[in-house]
Amino acid sequence: MPWDSFWTTDGAGANMSQMKRALLPLLLVGLLPASALAQTGPADPQIIAGASTARINVGQRKLVGHVIGTVQVAPDGSVGEVLITENTTESGFEPQLVKVLQSVRFRPAIDAAGQAVAASTEVKVELRQSTGESPKPVAAKMDPELNDKEKARIRRMRCVDFLWEWDLLRKEADNGVTTEFMPRIATIMYATMRSEAGEVVDAKVWKVSAKGLREAADRCRDTPDVPFWEGVFKPIMDEEVAD
Image (tube, rainbow, N blue to C red; front, side, top):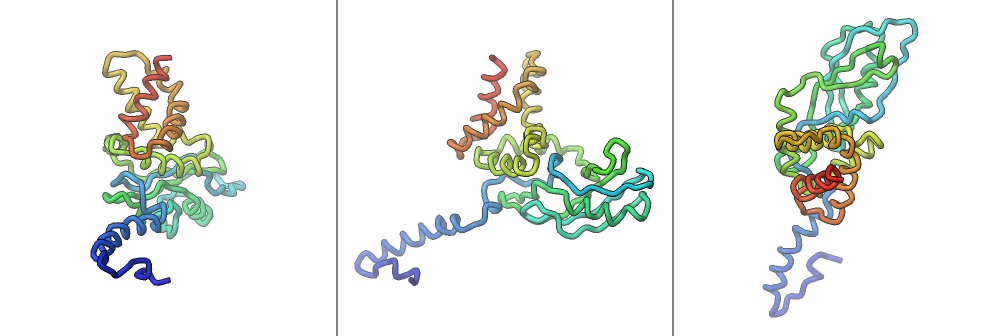
């Protein structure tokens, strides 16, 4: 049925036209993909450390060196094109390490309007005895102001923003979700606030932080428009630390 057939054209036509214009944005919002809504930006892509990645076959070769690659991160956090820009490992490792880079999962880049967007970032994979056949991808270049930027972003989050990111991290990292970058920085913020107030509660903060984050996610589902930090997480942590 044509869109206009839902509207009358009698004497109330002008009012109906106004209603149509008012409702159209709401209907369009309902049709937008989830990745286009409910985020707090801007932010660069962030590796989900707890997500599984491809393994390598070491054989008799030595675990030395690293590769650095520029990866294209899609709005859903998956990796597309990979370009190796530096390789100090044995040449035979490179195809396997490309597969490792392709398997990395990200919290995607978020633009200033709050939409998940495609972006590129540099990732490093170092071959170490401690990681064996499961090398750990990390950011190749660390932003010295990253923690401060993340703290400011967390303070701007509403519950709906936090939930979008929390659910994405939980899907990829499972039980390790509370140690991912955003949740960890939220806990650091709270611990720092209490320390600056002269309270020696740091050990208790870290002990209860996982429970506090999960409870914050539960409460946020009922109050999506409430500020995450001031309205939910901080009060929950106050309660948990006081117990």
